[in-house]
Image (tube, rainbow, N blue to C red):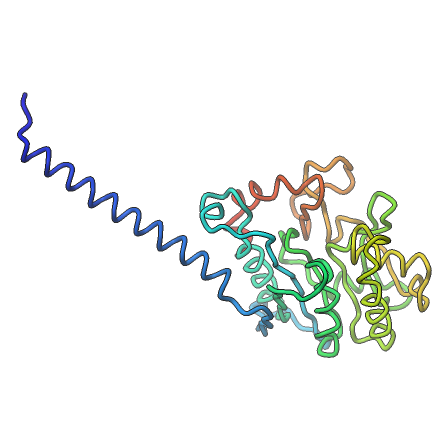
Length: 280
């Protein structure tokens, strides 16, 4: 059966129109994704109202996350070849809304390295809060039923500490990807100032602000040892389920899952698999 030239032209024209529409839609999605990430303010404080009617505490809490991608390519993000920075922001916002905590999102930094920005941000906002939970961008809240006062109460056996952090498995002493700092303590401003003084001692601190804090702990600066409480990694800093150390591995129901070091390459797939649950 012969197809007339007019019919072939009509098919090609329809195919071209469909292709143009699809390209326009893809362009719109990519531009919207780009703008949603790039046009947000460098510092943003979200004042959250609790959606959970039982969430109440006389203390004022904030959740701090520094989200500064080294590179951002909306095309790679669209095709899930690069972590979507908006997901970690929406994840923290969903948790803050659940419990009525403020959410501090930092998207730009003048610090020597983005990792140091969390310390600068703590210094910037600590006078406004009793506690700040600093949690890395590659750490995700998985069980939003956990609340910060319960973690603090469990860690405060005899007295309320100024620092609650999880001990790591090697000589770095602990992992600073998730920690609670009592910014309402009279001793914390002195600690934060000293911490910031160590920022430019780069050769000594390979792991940046984490090693600097470890140094302050091991040298017992201003009595920090007695003011620090270690908690198990799975209390609020579980590593990915594939981690080599079994007792650090994330399990269903854990509060947080973190993807540093050997877990980093698994973050994109985890984000893709849990996109909906992360922002509920």
